[in-house]
Image (tube, rainbow over all chains, first blue to last red; front, side, top):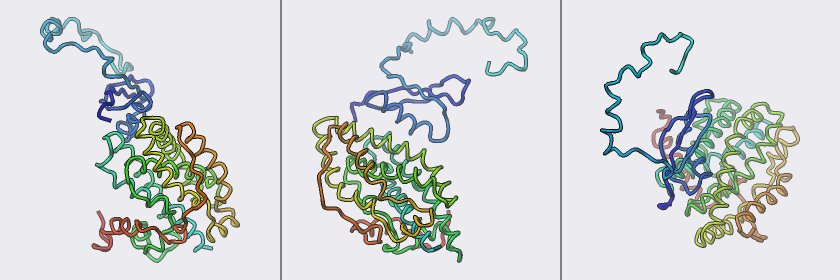
Length: 93
Length: 250
């Protein structure tokens, strides 16, 4: 079991919302990863749908490059759509 | 009739209580954090079902009985669980095999109990069945993984199956309470579940590349309250708090 690969778990809390990353776990294959995710992450009615993805399949940004990757966006407030009036009916923006 | 009903409910609920207690022993000791949580989830499902049954028994008994007195204050001979569920967690293979051999039976029992004329029992069965469907899926999956896994996992799960097989026949023995409750349209005739049980178990074992044991000698006694040497130790731990601090609550 020490050699089981790592999986990332994504859970949708209710229909209409998106899946959100909620953690990771070990499992020998996708079926076991789903069952483990059910037991570890949905014991308190957290979800209606589960996705699992092998962690090795995720390509991530390198924290060492955070400067050039993220900082250029920090002083560009005009990119936020905060200058628009949002209708009250619009949820989850 | 009331006493037969109470004895009948013990025959069902004590299986869930003792198996739940056995699985609870694994809390913090599972082979991995994921299987640890899965097994204790199953334990909590079973104890939750036990509570429903025992609340009903306490109501039938009256005289100040409650679910705790029913669960904790009986003597060993008064527990009517089958021998299978009290067998120890020798290793993960034994825990999974015990679970699998019980789950297949439990599911078939609840499917029939849903049709009981006793509305309370039918309702508990209906509520429990989704949990037990998952238990069956979980334990069957592990039987297949271990059976069709490595040479070591195959040999160890086969050993567990051979050792626990002698406790399967008792699942289908009829007690006096069973007979009385079947006559009332309340109880399930477990003898009718036997053929399908062995068929289903064998087909999963076959899929797992495991041998179905051909053992002709079976153990029995739990349903009459005559338990194996393990039962006293389980009850000592289970009853400790209520025996040491009578009537204590959280």
